[in-house]
View (cartoon, rainbow, N blue to C red):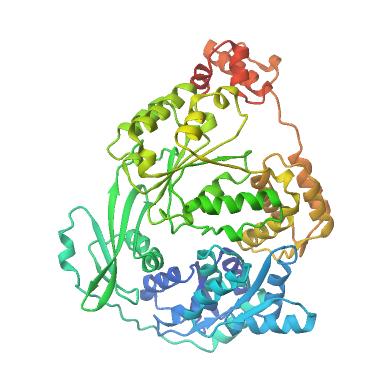
Length: 588
């Protein structure tokens, strides 16, 4: 019996993994193990599996090129076909901004053929070396390009510059061709691992994990055997090399780590070095009230990449871009799902404080006890300097919590040491709109206001938003969807959106799941939007079970009143004859 070729397939995205596994069922010569890994992740996978005696490695584009640098095994590239490129170009048809196709010859040659045959007019930029990527993308960005079509490595760099991207995905025929090529080209792996005892003196850092790399991003020192910590440090290398110094907060496993990165110099060489220290959170573990964003987190948001043809929204983006360069507090107003959080993230990503983490405090889950714990904790986020602190959903704060926060801000001047961003839904309750906290933020702290329009007031942006959501979500499901039919797009533009951009993205995702053809049909859109329009079920008084305990009956009554008042806590509390804070405690 002929020995099967033991093959490691490294797919840069989930959809390609599924496609490789499906095509592999038709190739009896291969014994396939498929994993997901992109660029540096792909390199780590090769190192981890070096003892498993693979005969062959199959990957794609930039990931394949990088893997070739660390292994003696034959590495087969899943080359892109004209059909693959046509699918990607079709996804741009509803995008109203300027786009370009960027990549090496494997990307741009089929794009050029398609352009000539169909008389398409779009920018094509061919790269000859990986070092050209950032400069080329920066130049295109300055020329007004906001969408990049390319392979994994190009789109990854584009995202770091805040550009929108469409990944050119591989089809069945391309995977089949790679298998045929790989069956003829395999040999045994002999890889060498480099070890270095450099930076032994760094061990003097007690209770701190230290990981250091050389200029080629090879690990030269580590005082830990925990793979997860090493991977976390390696993922931060590109940002550290760009910024020279960073501080981030990451959750690794069940623990929070404060990671500080510096560039150390020794004998005319530079060594990116990370110090990882376990942190005790200011609230109980796994509390979702406080989370963190770092400069390394995706999406890397640039203001020029916000898709809009709406004059009002365009003006807001211009103002937000100007405000991001200052240290003045900002108050973002907008309906649920209107994009308050992504705008706050963009302001942080483009600010002078981006080298430090952004701390997100969700006021929806905070009560008086939580605020008091944070204010008194030795690990309080308010004790930092030059951080961005984003307190979202402040319209949920009851009167007591508003007073606590206002008093702390007023007495500590923490907003003088850090950048504050707030967000809320205006008109959520009279108690909040007329409360002293809003007045303090706007007048005492001097917050600049940004008022976001809802999606129904920027219908002209739905086409571009739909294109972006399609390009983001199609690789997740491995579908061959090329876009929306015109009638389907018209239905989306005519719909009355209750939850704005978040709702549109969810609808697009559902449409992708339901679509097996190349285009999303109007009938599918009608069916999905009909479900979105269904009235919410209401609790009726005759459904209250009087056999329950008194406490349980009281909770049912409170839920009934809240439902009838549209979950407006102020109106519900008034009907029930209790204070809003009492109502909040009872439904907690």
